Image 1 (spheres, one colour):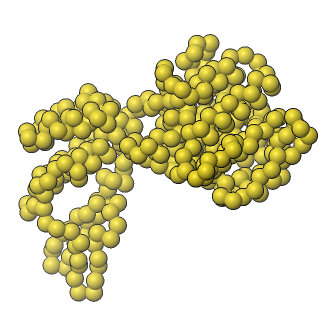
Image 2: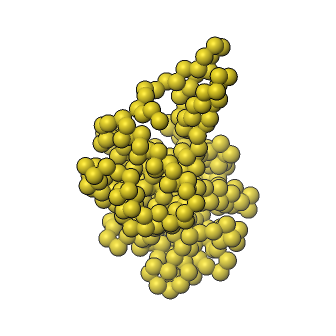
Image 3: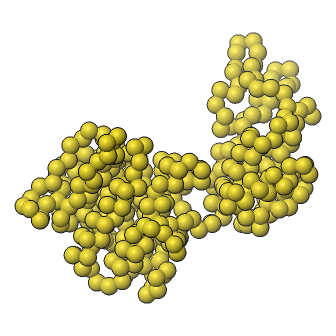
Length: 343
């Protein structure tokens, strides 16, 4: 995975922007493509690098790998652009191909944005960075320059997309580490949607990148936890069984054991009549039953619980991440839930 040290030694060498609009009901003519790279000064490069560092080191960023069978040109262009010394013509042509493909992947629900393609170096290793920067719908962007040498003026981009408030939802960084096709450190960030959702729009960025997730411990833990909550909510009907499995899930996630085996959890804590449907549910979500290293970094808030003690000795505990669960009133406490089990 890409580390803070990798980013600390990263320098931005060349930058190009392409405008990728939303698709309207009649369809759109396509992206507005730059003919030449964008002239970016040192402060602007630093601003882009700061944004990149912030997202690539966030909890929304995950190690990824190139998929062997993908229609995306991203893996091909990344390998090509990092295989040898910088070639300006190849960089521009490759970035234009990526912008066209990104537009093809857009739906009417996809936000417009600027695709920023960056040629960079991390220490002595060549790297490619892709960033999709949000811009307001209706904001007018125009290319400037002579025919065949058109590009976006950075003075305009500064006002539209490089302010501190500009949201960078989607990014990816690919650092070449050797001469082989898969000798890369790859990391992607999708800050707008749950990347493990079955919703098609949540898969949009990864489909564009032609990448799949590497199952790191925190990724495996989060996927198992969230998929189990989904199963409890959607499949199990008896309130007491829901409560039992939820309590065991919380307990096992909080336990000090460093490894976690889904198959063991199923056998020990899930009633027999639900075991096979649960296995099928996990299989459909591409979650293996084999043991993995547990890392709760991404689900810590979901494991927290608040405890309320009353004057008469009563104790109420509730999940910390559930809003409006408890209403504290002058003379009493209202729990906005139904009783599932009495212990």
